[in-house]
Length: 205
Length: 205
Image (cartoon, rainbow over all chains, first blue to last red; front, side, top):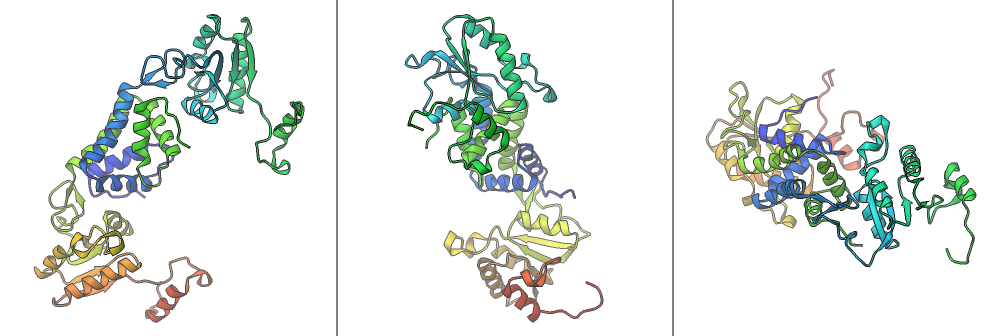
């Protein structure tokens, strides 16, 4: 059932919000009416924040992470280990790994994973520039930290083949049961792999 | 745990989205990154739609509904019954009633309900202008269609008192069990009221 909007401007604004992923027309209406109750300055701050971001955003020349500068804070931080590069799918994955505070190396943001179904091939991703980074010789280890999906696995294998000619250690983040998981609720594939890839118990978890 | 954003512009845009009701920082991040993947034109259309709405929106002089013109499409529609006015809380309620296609009269948008807890008093609502509309003499019936809450009831009673001196029929939308509801799952208060306010059975539902 098509709704009758009392105003064309309102309908347009609701339509724009409803294009966002996971936002339906009802939620869009609620958000737009919320903004309408704020003063003009607040609404302008909202609208312009995203326009400014899109206009002025830069991507790090080295790792392709979002950055305000040509080379990002992580890549330009000399106290980080430049010999280790963690390959991730997107910016959110960089933030997720950073939040663990367990990693002190650099990153390489692919911008996606190989997915023929979605029309994403290797040339759409930052794989060539990863090969160039490895070629340059400073990188000793490349850690593959992609999603454990068909597309992630395909991408892992593609990178493995691309980096095979070079003298670099290629590792993959561990797959196994999550911390806090109960065995009986873990899926068979994960549990099976976690037995095959068991590690030496050293007395610490 | 505070997240480290790789870009100040990104953090600002995420912050603006996270101010919206029901949007947390994770969802905000997802929405902003989605917009960042669109081209500049799309992002500008999004940002400007809501700014333009806020700048240029008008409210109908008669019923206070959102409108692109001084008097809204509903109030200026001569085929509608100008002697009946349905009092609602907000614009969404106008759209909800319109969607039923059961109502051919006009509306009066209060802009809220009396709620001392939220600092909303009668003077913050369009109650005076409702009294003025009734005073002018064309209105024969005022239908109260507010939420069935404490605040809605308070507002109903306030309007009842305000309109008492005038020769106008004051009605309230029916409260009872919802169509499709099963009796055993209906709350006591609603079921009790629906028995007290029973209507004559005429053979049609």
